Length: 260
Image 1: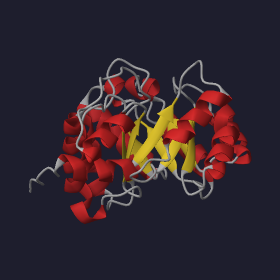
Image 2: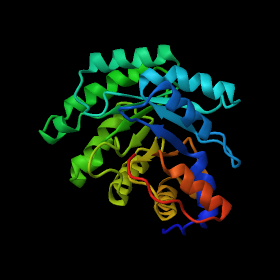
Image 3: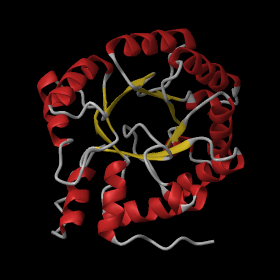
């Protein structure tokens, strides 16, 4: 059954609640992360989370608390961006992130190993991450633009869910092809087959209200429109916030900025 698109302002309000406001730049500093946290205080509510490198988790937590936004979660990335570290190394990264105060963990699936025919590497990595995360939500980045082939995207999704992923995430935002509707639809099919117990994170390349509306409609096909929210859906983006606020206010869309 096809789900109609939400009006732009309604879609933007929902997407804002589901936004992982992200900065994963090589030149990030504590000051730039504090500035990112400042953006989380908007006239229309706050995003679900800030997503930053592990070194900046404490700065993000401190600034959010100072702004009265302690409910905004702080996510961080491990095994990022190449997805080639050993399970033990990634588990240690997660332990350090937890000690720093991270609320959510985004880990990169070893997609190159899967391309080479090694499915066990992905299973071992996600299982180790699941153990290391404890109660923290685990988002598994499949890097769908690099996997490319539908059968590999489906297989990676199935492995991640079987080993305990709380969210399937499309992309690191660090490759040529990031989120696509085709990949999100495939991931949604696997999530639905597993009982919709896991969420979906659309990351990289989401830059317009039309993009948001399309992905909301795809997510509604998986969960039902009434279940859409930060527990089932996230958008990982940096420049999307300004687009959402403009749509809510009824103003013109800002000039597109490239990047995550």
